[in-house]
Image (cartoon, rainbow, N blue to C red; front, side, top):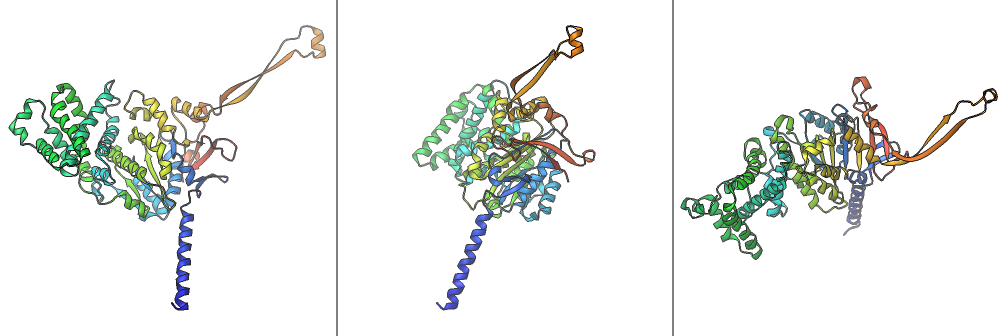
Length: 498
């Protein structure tokens, strides 16, 4: 090798080292994303510590002020990628403007109903990274839970029983189909369940023996070779040939109603076209390209179809993140949910408890604590809500409109020991006392624990933007266990809507 070649090789090595060094610096989780004040940065590390919860009544300015400021900071960082669930038709122009003004337009993908060229088969994606039958079942039931929360509420005292039975039905059906064909599709899942025998007499019927259900069982039995596979398959076969036909008609009908309600949405209209056919992009591609996906199917416009697709994307994105092993070169991942009650389910608390070590986080925006209560399908909805919200280590409170949420905000800040002073004055006992000013006053004091901020602070006096307030919105930022530069774990600040 000549001297010139050696110099060239050395320069190439130095260039690679510089690029690697700069890249390592860019992805440091100790870099600041934005600043609450001149002395209070929000670093990637802080963001990953549970994400951000933004609460405020309708019209408080949470989306247009603090939400928009945080969104700009996240998008501006080139080492971020994420999922955005649109809650309103106006979200698309807002997010398009955010990506445009931050110079990141090429990083935005829009999943926009029939106009979108993007497609993702949910069940195929659930199976992509080694997901077994249980993972496919979890995907379907979690989406179904989110869909049902807006219609059926908690479903009465037997809800837990029927939800468990619905999960068993989907699991065993998926087990047979996966063994028979190597994959599970929503249309074949629907066909397999609806063609199952409903009585022991039907099992000996020649028509049923030649139908789709029995053919799938025969194919699965023939294809399955491993001991574990045969064990799992035999459980499924025993269910459909023994337990299922022997069920009381009323019990079976109740189980079928829930399953068919979810599969009906899966296999009809826009939902079928977008998430039950093909896949032409993946979360892996988004992560490599540092792209953001905006699911522009607002429930206010698309109804159940919008909620169904948004819930599916959220769950699959969460599962994808939890499978990742965090590395220094990895980007951080954000799941952004405005009107978060539309997409909430029991898996969110589990995800928030684990996502930090995978460089994931969530940003939730909603009006009140009540909105999460109605989304939880269980008798302990309040406890589930508190478990979910307690995982957010950044909480931003704009003007609140109900006492329960204001009380929760106040309780989140805790209490401190306060000293209260008092006293009394008694009338003079004689003319002599009056003439010479004899003091008959007494003083007293006592100490007791009082809320750091009273609930009324969150309901009165916080500006909510608009021309009347100079487009300024006030908020209280809480960071449990971490002090701001003012020495407190909370900060009263102002955000601009401009």
